[in-house]
Length: 124
Image (cartoon, rainbow, N blue to C red):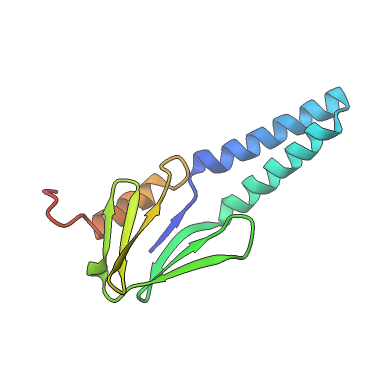
């Protein structure tokens, strides 16, 4: 199961980048051009980047700008609980929390994740 970055996050970064580049060209402002280029790169990377992937008893969190990954192993799907924007993983007797800001993750994919790993005792 894969959760990508939200469209709002991706397109906002691209919009801010284009806006800064246009303002930098119009005002001959180098700083605005650099900031715009950074935003465009962030938005372009986020277009295809994965935020979190759950597979084969491991949760992998991906960094947006670097090839860094954080892997959290678990024993069974029962060790995963999703409560709102938080993903709880029990590994080696310790429960770890993964916070997924709602503005940053694709809500449709996150809802699917919630349905698959619903909080135990929830009435849904």
